[in-house]
Length: 310
Ligand code: UDP
Ligand code: MG
Image (cartoon, rainbow, N blue to C red; front, side, top):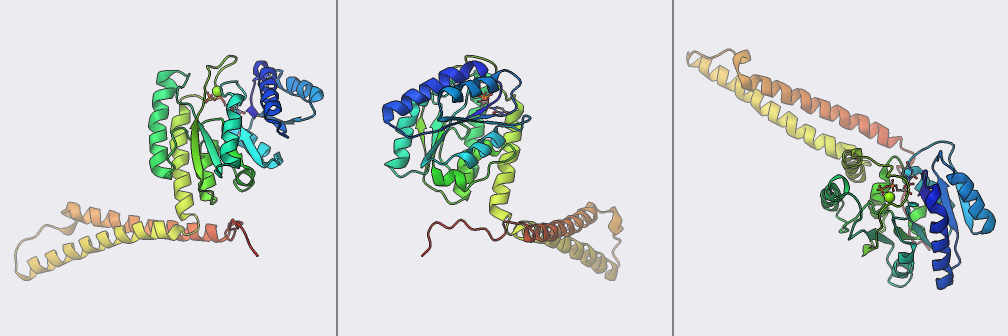
């Protein structure tokens, strides 16, 4: 669980998780990642782990963001099944047994929560979130309704094979898909109003979220072959510019040879369009070459996720 200034929620949260784990007879560990809290969260975490050796804490020196906290927890986790929850009591630990069963019995690799009856502000969260999820479904091809839900359960393999960075925690199912885990599903979950403290994300989440979605979809398709993207658009541009140029010159020559008066080339709008298209086409090609050089130097250029080998 990533947490930033959630001191009031932690005791109840851990207590409920412990109860669920006990009722299911799970062997478990609870990892609380304190993402640079400035309230008493860390002393609560320490107190909890003193009374229960299955509770572990990781404390960042400063606030790095939810993605960083999740990534750090994923690196530490060693379960066959790994779950994430928000630490603000909005997600119910009582949902975990059902979700875990979908991993262990039904063979899913990612089970994402779906806050079907969402208890947040309609205008600042619920409606924008619907739009955002619609776009995310179209772009990622993953048919789930609540990509950014805090409560998710994973096959342990998944979290070891993805890297959550920046603010990519919104797209973990997409990261999993790109890493080759295709059995992704969702389960409606109970959602509560925030009891203590306030939300850590403002409206800019939607703008940033969309930009991240564009970056992810670009990198997942073209990061190993950027020239296929830039080169293709470059060729189209350049070709358009070239045809316009030939057209302008040919028209001029034909008119001249027949002695018909003709506008100066530089007086024609088409001339400027042709110029623009040729320059843009060249620039796109240059961008493609530079990206190829970068991707050739990427440390993971030959990293493949191998499932089995014998
Ligand atoms: N969080 C975090 N680091 C941050 C922002 C948030 O660890 O920089 C945690 C936060 O404490 C909570 C979870 O991420 O446990 C979800 O945050 P929040 O409840 O503010 O998001 P919302 O429910 O409003 O989407
Ligand atoms: Mg919340």
